[in-house]
Image (cartoon, rainbow, N blue to C red; front, side, top):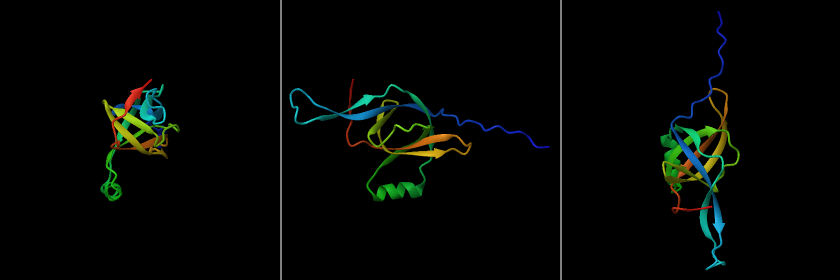
Length: 125
């Protein structure tokens, strides 16, 4: 007897993240030198599930002097790029890469590799 198994949607219950875009803001005091700030996207927060960072991946990034902090999976979202910052529990992480994948259950996801940002960004409206 064959059971009719339905695919189970992945659970994104390890936490929530908010996505911010990195923007250059011109200040009235110094219009020639824009200041890098971040602007929150309207579609936030997003649930995620934590992914393991394998030793081979960690070594590869360390050889390139890149400190990987976290790797997470979210439901598929095409608008995330390396010009974004993810905020998890009030801590900022720069998006190093966003890769579209298919989960083991057959659902489209976006895997985000998050690194330490070069600076702490100020939020702009």
